Image (cartoon, rainbow, N blue to C red):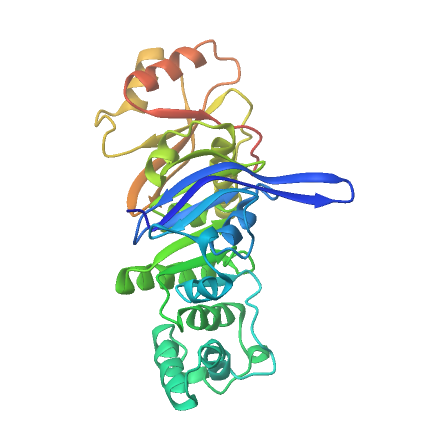
Length: 343
């Protein structure tokens, strides 16, 4: 049985300018213990979908099941009880600025009727888990962005949820802090078996932490599956675009590419454990008697698996580009054209 099952879910909003369909017949299955990514550009519908998962938004059509129980059949009281099993963290932390770190974490426990002594004991345990034991008496204004998000994670864990929903939880953070938050989420997932759903527009977040991903565009899921498979064999245009954007950010950050990448003259190739072990690039250069520039090469962590990635730049006046692409494909390499990246 799936931990989260989304069946034929649509969501339509009525506005003064007419109806807006934010979700269109979404179907997803998320297994217990997964770290599941939902990714898309701005306006893709991903945040609406995550709010439907805990019924902060009620679907216009379709059903949401949590461990086989359909949320639409719950009374308001039953729904409030169910939400205790679903923690949520946000991009802008949503901390109570006038409360100390400890009291921020205690707050949901007080709401659930816990006594002050019991709530404070639990809050201190959670602060230790997120690495902020020394910040119990501090106030949010005294914390960095990463520390604020750690407090928000501790607060979300206060009621021992089975599911943690993360809505753009790292978007306001710098890359180094993002990496530390993702490491914390992985640790929480492994230690407590919590199912984590991550809403993001960053492919780097998905490939670093997620086992599975759904890619959204205009309210629809256009592709879903294992992260490693989609990274290697993207089928939809939006998946290819998101991977290319991730690559472009990587190029910009490293500053190691000194050549313009011209449309149609360059490809991205991915080496996996199933790729050929022959020196493919060297043999291709020998066969076609034509130089090829290696514009970028590195290894990325994709769902916990190392994947080699390379950008090849063909000669501007080459007549062999298509033949060389076919050569790479015949040797088991997945290739994608990449356009318009400049150092």
